[in-house]
Length: 259
Image 1: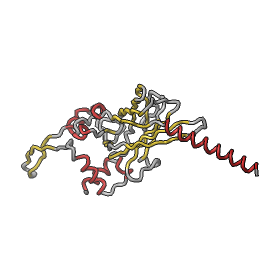
Image 2: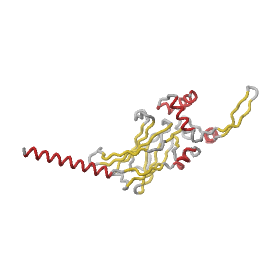
Image 3: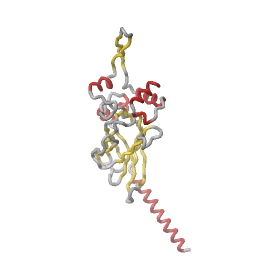
Image 4: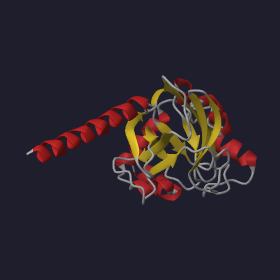
């Protein structure tokens, strides 16, 4: 009987220690207090600063480019050897790692990109509880609305074991667009003046008339209005395009023309 009691007490003590360690790790886990997308700086680098949505705090990016994000953590500083921070990007309702509609990037102390033409992350700056990273977008990724979740946790002495995992769901939607400035994108335009004329110019002429008599009618394209990108996303969803097909400009154009 005494052995039974001793075994029980040892088991209870072990459970108590595990519970205390878990609670301690949860308390120590980094919590995201604020996130900054550097909308204007990124937009200028991505040729998207004409989009009205950018001025409302919405990130509008282009594939094949890199962008900056700053995290500020609550209560304590970030420690690379102690803290796990992951950026989880997802597209659509059934995001999938094999299909490329879900991406998980783990923050390390690397200050340079090591993967060419793929998703990648590097540490740009670290000041106490504030961490700025740069994230590289592949030139072939699915375009449209992406979601972002920041996962944090605490490394333990046991390899591959992380405790106190927390999730911070970023409220802002992230628009990723085709990129005619990127040589790796299938919509690439070699001449910069062509990008200026056919992508950034929001006014022009619509040619009308007959075979023997044509004339140009002045037209405002309005592609940068705040309602345009949400409207395009709605049209593509109504067209029933598969998530992986959103990466193909030909299929996207056909879907919009049918909508």
